[in-house]
Figure 1: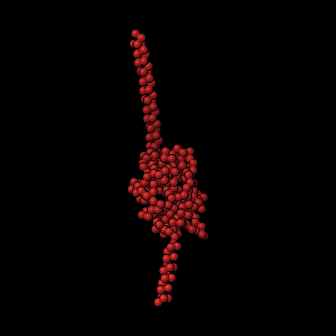
Figure 2: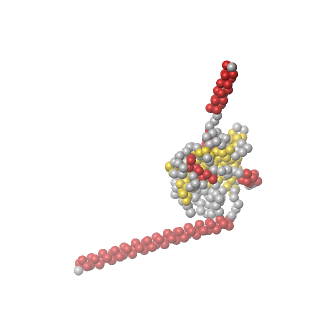
Figure 3: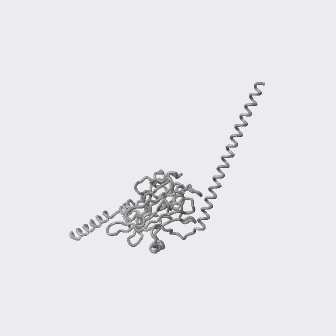
Length: 302
């Protein structure tokens, strides 16, 4: 009996030690938190942002609240690392803005780029990259690219973020795409800091309960970018460099682009008209004031 108790105690001890030494996986996705942090750091992109952006920098969100509230506009980058089958891991890098301040602006602008990485010979390598630009709109210019074509197989690429609209592009040359409303002028690197792991929907990390808030579309964007359809498209594409992910709608985009130009011209004309009316009003007021003072002076003397 003593031997049996000793064996049972030994087994319980081994089991407890094995449990205690299991790597933490607080978002319950099958990938340890330590590996997620390592991958998010290794492949962190360099974000180029405009000095003219009306929202300054991506925002850090107050942790623990059910809805997003800006703590600071300090260039914070949020990440997500999720297994995607066959040993692949999908990494998302979110740059979150308090507002989209372009045409048809709105509160809470959620933008991102992503990578599909896998372990090759003991080293993690990126296979593909994806950049979201006006996702799911008529102006969608989201693009995918082989990591080697972007020289971003072992580390993150440089990503250009358009001013105001915050669409993500793999080069400055691509920035004027979409419907003509994007601009990448006066660009500089955003401040670098550790990527803040969001965890998974339903299992947030670092106080990111606000990721599931219905006031913005972040939860929907935490799903896989590299689905079977995109992987098939990537495998079938022969040309090097970034390519459009969505079906092309050049006619509609040209129409919206012309509309943007027309609206811009009308806004400029409105501004010039308002300035002209303001100037005329000011000059008329000055003339009336001078006339009043002259009449008053004459009456005082007579």
